[in-house]
Image (cartoon, rainbow, N blue to C red; front, side):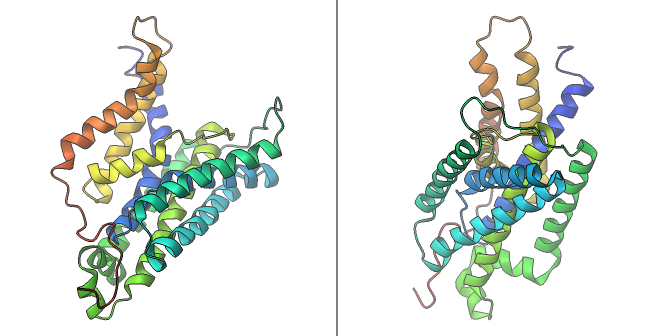
Amino acid sequence: MDVIFTVATLTAGLRLAIPVAVAALGALISERSGVLNLGLEGMMLAGAFGGYSAADATGSPWIGLLAGIVVGFLFGLLLALFVVAGRSNQIVTGISFTLLAGFATTLLFQQQYSVGQIPPRINRIGLPALIIVTVVVFVVVAFVLFRTVAGLSLSAIGETPEAADALGYHVGRTRTLATGASGALAGLGGAMLVCGPLGLFIENVTAGRGWVALALVVFAGWRPGPTLVGALLFGLSDAVQLRLQGTDTAIPYEFFVALPYIVTLAALVIRARASHTPAALGVPFVRGAT
């Protein structure tokens, strides 16, 4: 127990929670508008690769964060082109985007660094700066959603797009921008992972954190505050399993690897029934349809 309850474990938990928290806030934006962004894991991965490549080329991890935002935003707009403008199935399209990002980043990474070549480490951003960035993102997202006309109209579109359209709000444009913003924050989360605690990129570096972020949105009931709490729970569980792997125990190694995901799943099951899902989530909007 002394290995678990330490300042080092809490610090590691914060580092691991931050990328998931930022990506989850991005998922929250798109889902409150009615777009189910199952491409979040792929957007995180694309943002991580873009952030690493930019930071490696320029020597600045802050430029890496900006690159992650840009890459994620472009992926978000591309997803919106299919699911908002094209009204394609959001589940199938989102999963396809994640698979595409996984294949693309692996291919580009292998072309950039040959087998046996060790990718260079990049300059890393310290934990205090990452916390500040996360707090700023949280404040901006919460303020826009609950204190601005744009945020209130976005939530209305996620609940009753027909009524919002009748009041003069542009459903397609709002959902497109929300999906782009979702991708931007997912890309930022991926870039924060490689430009922060890791300092390098490896294939599939996000390791399912995008899927965890999607689950945390449901756990939080599509609210920013509980989303941060859920991300911290995941981060602490991840830090604990890393600590426990170094202890002398008869428990299989695979259990520790799965621990943070088990905790997240358990929390999701407990909280899911109390969550209020946006009524129009995953439903394409067709003007004039009955």
